[in-house]
Amino acid sequence: MSVSRRLALLCAAVVVLVYLPTLSFGWVDWDDDALLVGNALFRGLGWAQIRWAFTSALGGAYQPLAFLSYGLDFLLWGMEPRGYHLTSVLLHALNAGLFFLAAWRLLEFGASSRGPQRDLAAGALFAALVFALHPLRVESVSWVSERRDVLCGAFWLGAVLAYLRAREPGRRRRSLILVHVFFGAACLAKGLAVTLPVVLLVLDVWPLRRRLDECLREKVPMAVLALALGALAIAAQAGARASWSWGEHGVLARLAQSAYALTFYPLKTLWPSGLSAFYRLPVPLDPREPRFLLSAAAVAAVAAWSWVRRRETPWLAAAGAAYAVMLAPVSGLFQAGAQLVADRYSYLAVLPLELLAGAGLSAILARRAWRAPAMAAAVCVCVVLAAATVVQQSYWRDSETLWGRVLALDPGSSTGWFKLGLLRIRQGRPAEAAESFSRALASDSGCLEFLSRFERGVELAQTRRGLEIRPVCRKALSDLGTTQAQRGEFLQARRLLTLALAVDPEDAAARRNLARLADQPR
Image (tube, rainbow, N blue to C red; front, side, top):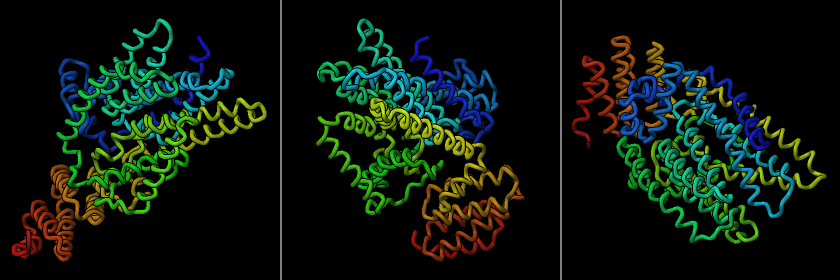
């Protein structure tokens, strides 16, 4: 076995070791319930399951290969979550090995001179371990519903590796066929992969230094495939009503959010503290907030400096361009969902940044006097990241811990309180459920979309716990409706009081307060 493959296996083995705690985790109430626990349609790999996977957009995402991977898990493990977690961990370990191989080749192409291979190998190994062991990866690995990240990553990295091998004599035709196959599979695992043709164009400029006209002709089939599969992904989001309209989220708000996202992931890569499963999007988003203004200024400064210095430091311009391209679909420019940013969005996007870290280590190792301290520092970084990842994993062990962590970091998260309320209902703790629902509505009382989710929560309460739940839910709804009426929020007040009557038609106070709103503006 070659040295490169042995090191790739070593990298994968380290990743599996660090992620072993995930195998003891269960399902979480964050899409796992809807996609897997409560969904019998994916279970198996028969014609019915395959047809459903390729025609479904459950959860607002077109991800047929991800659903088929769940079907395989079901055949192997039934509905035992340990097996599903194992598959995600193994895919992530595979990605670490693939990225190591791709990073080594990219460092060879980018090297200004033929330095020692061991320095390039060390840099590539460092880049791969920083990628795989960083706590920002935990959401994509320890959350079963994000299987699409690690599955897409495997095909995406396979396509990049095949593309780099196409530069070798005698391997061009076969390798380019593999590029297209892997690219299509990556898009069918997660629509975010449609940016790969542009990323490959960036690699053509640097470090491959190819003629642009030849590169563009080569990408035409990929561009056609990207447009077709991208349209399917957009249609899936539109069908689930997950996308925000331009009226709801304007141009300036989207640009501000995008600039914030571009700075968020590099900063969290450097200092991964306060990582959460949910970072709420402020509604409305004010682009004049200091965090958005500072982010925009930082992005503009880095972009300008990279452009001015593009001949002296082409590696920085290429890494920055690839990062921005990969992040663009989930940066807020095409907003879907209620999150401002999300750890999972960094899974592929930060690969260029980690490659820069590997290149930096290789350059330092070329100086003999700095070799020992540089290697020691690199090992320390990997150990610290692994320890932080073990801690971050622990927040995903169950729904109680997950939403407790979200609320510890953001006590005003309506989503966190709502999810905690649903959990309390399932635990048979109706009074605490009503309190959580009340805190959710108090945190986001003007959000009608949330009120519709709350209505489904009340329906769940009625069907699962019956009369035991009704009094506390009715009181919470009635009290909140009265409070909203006093604030002049008549639309929300009517909705809440109507829900209170739906829960308990004998609630005289709710009926009386609703009647008083008859003459108020609608």
